Picture (spheres, rainbow, N blue to C red):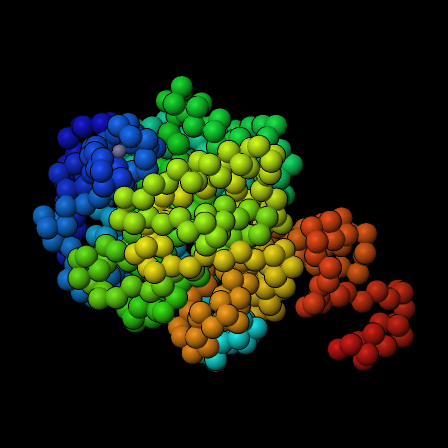
Length: 482
Ligand SMILES: *Cc1c(COP(=O)(O)O)cnc(C)c1O
Ligand SMILES: [Zn+2]
């Protein structure tokens, strides 16, 4: 209901004066900087085509002057907005009034120290932290953003929502549709790439699932076209409201660290929405005076989908306060097309050629003095096995963060006693095929799923033991291996 007058509700602690008077959409290109109302549905700047931010007039908003406001909400667990790990931080992305907020209890996630994984990475005890976003309702961090996108969609009265997805965005969209019944969910996936764990969620939750002959980048291009044509609300991370919700991952990290800023945040990079949201979160917290320094940011690509690594690390592409000539990215995409190079990695959630948030991520890397690395399939799977052995469990894409941290420690870029947070973006059960193939004794399965990708060994395999259906054999196996 664009523009309609809604009763204005006050939060007990603060005036969350939401929306059009204090929040707006703004083009990220400083040379353009065009602004638009938060009542508009846009996925890029109508004047220049760059990405849009949700921006706030912090001076008028009077944001919290200490983190205590958020801590006090833990006493109000019966309030859905205080219970949500996203909306507990509503004052830090106040684009919607309280009564528009859509929450299904997302963001109940944990930051844990893992000395097991820390040892593997090369860190001293107590220094490596894992932010386990697999605990979200649909099993990935995407719910942080979906909750915010649905809130915006509800504000403007959308009836249908769509996304292109490697699996997790669709699972998230589908669960929000199923729980809230606010919109019909329409999902575009590339053919043959999606893991069964994720596909099963979209089907089970009842979303319309359209499998197109092409990869993620094709699906993305199509869904943009279709949603423009049919007026369907797009929930991919080009939606600036989604990234507002994803900022809360960093707020929870800080909360878990007693509001101390860690030295490093390490995150896998696919469409680069998360890394962009993290950079924005820290820039804003610093601006409003809640923190005085920002962590460094490491974004990790899979070697089979390494656009950011190629552009940032190898070709030296930088944001330069928004003044940089970003045409090398277009040239690189032309090269990819010319060479018919397609992203290919077991880490399907980051199997992306043309990251839609590239420009925002370059900005985040500037804010957080960032680095970019790429990791091989072998490194990803070994790291994933270590995350599992540490009692967490994640899908392959998530393990890229741990594999990347290990590489950066080996290089001496990350110090062994620095405080590091690796984001585990998705749950272990999202992609059981990769896990079983890694631990299997079945050479054929191993070759099919992993060998074909250049994985030569399963260094941390926990192999099952086959025995006959006989008591003595079973007893012998337990005594031998137990
Ligand atoms: C979406 C996703 C990513 C990639 O995140 P971006 O924000 O697109 O960079 C990484 N891991 C998992 C599990 C995901 O679902
Ligand atoms: Zn613009």
